[in-house]
Length: 310
Image 1 (tube, rainbow, N blue to C red):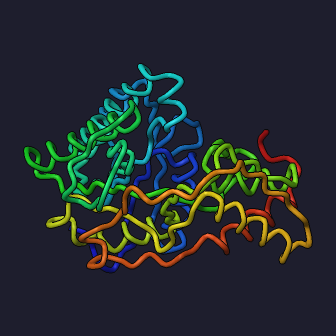
Image 2 (cartoon, one colour):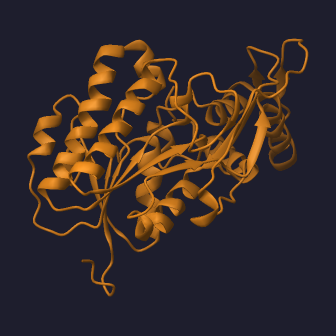
């Protein structure tokens, strides 16, 4: 049992990644002791998704209150390297859970995705049956099943999070590898090319949540995991892709006096096919961060840096 006078300790897998880097910074700012689990030498714990059994066998000599499993092959890697990615996501999750059992870590949070729903329609909440449409969604759903299994059979307190499209300023812009995420990609294109080019008319709408709000939800849910096992994480903003591009355009003009062209193919507006929602989030946390401040901060960072990854 955690001493209430001490700082809680969290292990974050995938700590060198986009989400993991922001999460480490958040929990340190909240006075948690943060241990990193990655395949890099500077990590506190070595965790290579290609050799998950090695991580599962590690034993540490300090108590840990929470394990956040955010190490996974993302959607681009799953598409380009499906066999390796499926193994990394599924076996990596089992390794994380076995590590927690071996080290008596009773609480595990898994960062899943709303892509477990494939081609969603209607109101999507925690009671909606997932139906993945690709390896990325399916491998995450299978990993979710591992958490449910260990919750049922091993008495772990496990929590599956399904965030919508998330955003946040990378801790290290120069080493960021997630420029395929639309909010990041639009900001980079605006700074580098003074232009944002949409491949479609951009009427499709997406819900967005800040990584910091995801972390705040985890911190708030920490003591509720005995009764909470699945949580959708919609954010406070739903924008069309063209509205997001226009937001970046407006921030660049108003804040930096830089004109950005937004190129959009012609097309008719489309109706939303689904709404991403949660029946449970309101009892845990209310996400509040919006895209405009993120766009301002990221564009400012990019304008000051000429050496971010190409």
